Length: 201
Image (spheres, rainbow, N blue to C red):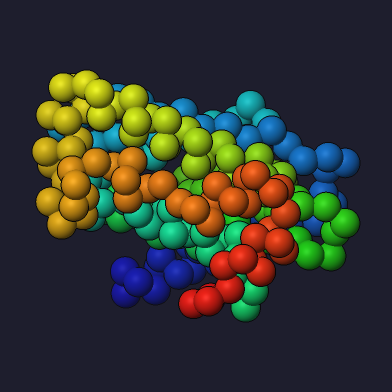
């Protein structure tokens, strides 16, 4: 029954977002991300679109950042679908759903983004530029990891909580760094990037 309510909640949110964006803005809306210091195996991440923000808490178990990296890679190179949903298990009653959908009928790299927590009120949504979206998430998390790994606080509040098999060398930056994403950011062209990384997709 719980799964049924979650599915209904997802469909309701999606319908509201599609209704809001029947007519897209004249230009993509600004997108941003902020990451708070880790605390006892939890990290708060705040996403913002056009000045409106929403914060979600990520738990170290299961480790969330490898899934985020793989989700970004799929958005760039997968050709068999337009929309990509990431379910982030936050170790509490309401999982966080993060979604990006390509809008191929447009002559630009805009896409539809939304985030909400199943069972909670409201959502964050926006029409955003794909390159800006990928860059904001990837560089923010990678920079956060690289800087944090220099400190005792990050090691004590995050790295030591994550199962050792998730970070074989003990570093978040090593498992999050992506050749696919960095190639896309350099080329600013997902079609060229796809041609370079087609095997396995």
